[in-house]
Image (tube, rainbow, N blue to C red):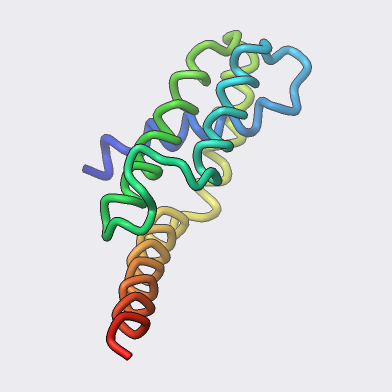
Length: 120
């Protein structure tokens, strides 16, 4: 599963790195903006308060939009951005597991808060 997610995250990070490059086309920048808005918007396909599934759609939809937009980048921009992305991932190999742990803790806190508010 992680082997399938790595290229998506690599391209998503590459797109985020390429946003500052003047060679990045407007549609790629627009797709990145849409992904960021979707991630912070309270309106989702599955509400964030839905246990596990609510945050899961954000974890799948946002990187997928970013990865598809990254594929529309010109080759030199994509190459430079992927190099920066790979360097970051090489320096921070704990990043993906840390995001997973943060997700589990966050969901646990939300469920705990809901149980406490409904129970007493």
